[in-house]
Figure 1 (cartoon, helix red, strand yellow):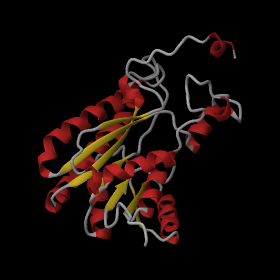
Figure 2 (cartoon, rainbow, N blue to C red):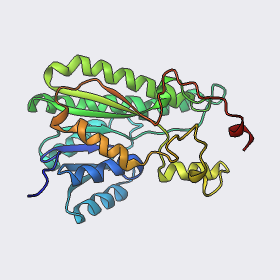
Figure 3 (tube, rainbow, N blue to C red):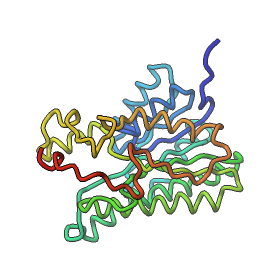
Length: 270
């Protein structure tokens, strides 16, 4: 007897799904029976990932769109409807995380980060809302960050955007829950993506830095993998989460609120 697939017959758009967490989610959702719309800033890359998903036995379409613009979101949702005839779920994963502090965050940088990380998810939900209503409900998963609670000093604007995303998640979940629309957020901790590995190498980290993490940063001895985030996301996009709404899950190895790690001198001496 074959195992039932938890996202069978669901149509789900995953933004930023040509790499990292988004790609992991798109591929896993397809294996769970969803028809996945792959999105990326480069059409060719989105087409490539969608092709690989279909070659693996899944169903996928592709769409591109520069999310810093405010006029592409309605078109992206329309493309999903044109390709699959409906939309059941939206994963707002795409984002940018330039390093900046108060002195280096000018108006242009701030506006770009907010446009991609905060305004675009809002506009995509807004564009999907009529279709969710027509179908009697829909699911949205916003991919946030543990930086939403405070954030690192050199991630000022990024942290602000993720804090705003968390408020938006709870606000919209409250506003539209009675219509069968469920909205959630993952506040993701340190995740080992190809991009994160590249960023750390550029910052001067040794090639094998993921294997040399102090326990204070990774109690499990390793970082989170995109596939683990994808596995958890299945529940929230499935019918199993029908009575859960407005939840913000800290996808981290340790409690974020109130954490006060022991001051182990050996960590500072390495």
